Length: 373
Image (cartoon, rainbow, N blue to C red; front, side):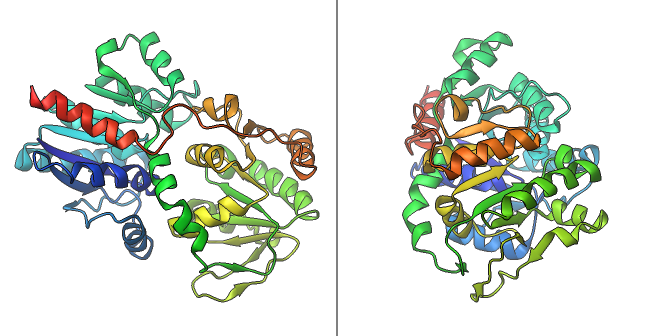
């Protein structure tokens, strides 16, 4: 079985790592790792691959950034050439980024089987580009590997045949559980204070409108009077901070060397971190405030309180069984939740079914059984 595993953006690599590792155990599988270059920072990509034990990509498309249409089109044009040359039996895509949709579309039109890992997640919010990517990718996939039981229900309601749907668990948690102890030992990021709130923001609804973004920063500024905030800046978020001239809200820190970071009673900002360092910061935080999907899942397993600054989530299991709560961008709602966290009254999280570190094993096993027939 010749399998192309597609990764495009940073969150994809935590999902691809255990799948590559598992696929390489089988002599009958020829796995090819393809990096579309949708998100590409040589410095960050190299250390990411090194930390997660991912082999160097067999194919690099180098499509770069651009509008959704430009990026999707560039990936499709380049990926079609790859499929014509390599003639894979199956194309495996993960998550919900533009690369996921683009490669699934190309493979489907060329009658190549498509396997979608993290299928069936729905926010019901079609203003999110990711929701469109999820809906379309699922509708043309041959194998739909779901991380939670609500995802199975979503797919069944959309008319996906039952035999295509496979509840396997969460591959991102495979990576977290594998590297959790190593992350706890990392000491690259040293802080002058051990008590802090960790924040990540990158959704267009939160950072692409100046008044919306500033409203969030005013709330964070209020929280920081009680407990320091560590704000990891996504590249597009940093761009918006500069565009809207919001630098006055931040104490910018440099994490490029191993110096101790002097944490102030304010919003302390720095750029993206390698996986192990970020996982360590997340695991030791008093709470995490985010608009990321994956972080809702990771905090659930880490048992860290999570406030999601969105009106909806495609990962409701993190609320029903985990440590997550939707708070939108409502000041009173956020501050009330923070009071509960600071007084130790937050709900404890549990481990959703199959979030046990074996999801990638189940996925490769299902594909092997199919291609053995």
